[in-house]
Length: 75
Length: 264
Image 1 (cartoon, helix red, strand yellow):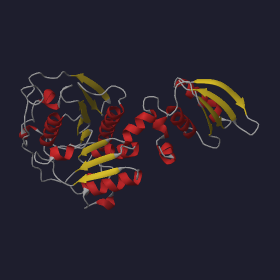
Image 2: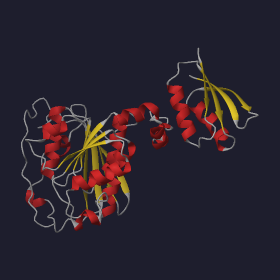
Image 3: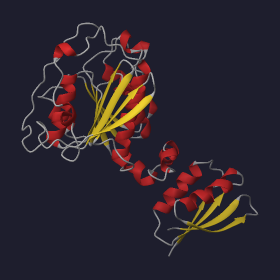
Image 4: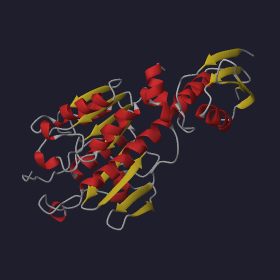
């Protein structure tokens, strides 16, 4: 099981979600994606969209450096 | 996929039924559009925008002022230049990431097999019954899926043919209507917008076939009347005695008699 870290802060919706989908498509089942995204529409939409695709959002934490860290487990 | 491609195709990639895989399939696909007129225009624009990696476009005509009311890929500045040249310029302006092959020729029984052979899906966007039946015959012989489309006045019809799996154009219509029964050019008006309505459906069918999503208009003829805005689907079955696609069907191509029209 591997862990990939991606910082998509500053990338607007829905490009950040398209990039997230591409990262997940290249990972194996149960791998972890540690993702950094912006506050606002990104955190309000992206985790739900990821779950609708069948993946698991394990946690969402506000980052001191701005934005959010979300942990996704690939299905 | 490159960053600029991710951004260009983001609205496809985030669709669950298309996604990354579907967009990659489109980028690796080849579609041939026969006719750069009313139907071919929207098909060419949307397939170029969608990132279909290789698009062929065949048409022998030059752009004429009377085309511009419905053939939206061409502009007033293009009058007099070959339609395939005009179409290629617009498609590459939308998406420089794709390859466009042009065939400035009339499609007939001697050149069609060679032209369609490298493509995954064919669009019938031609304006006469002779070529429509020839496209059907060639696609049946070479097992190429295609979208039939036709428009007249305020109505349109389309079906998607998966040769030997679903009804072909000849299963449904058998053969071209007698020449004197078809509308002459002077009586056959067409509302420009229905070319966009029908061509856009054909482009959608091509994308659905290439990405393997949804249900195709195979064994179904979709007809619409823009005056009442009624859409109907008529179910058909493959005709086991079809003169083209049954086991007693055609073994070689024929040219059908074309209706001459001098009115432009």
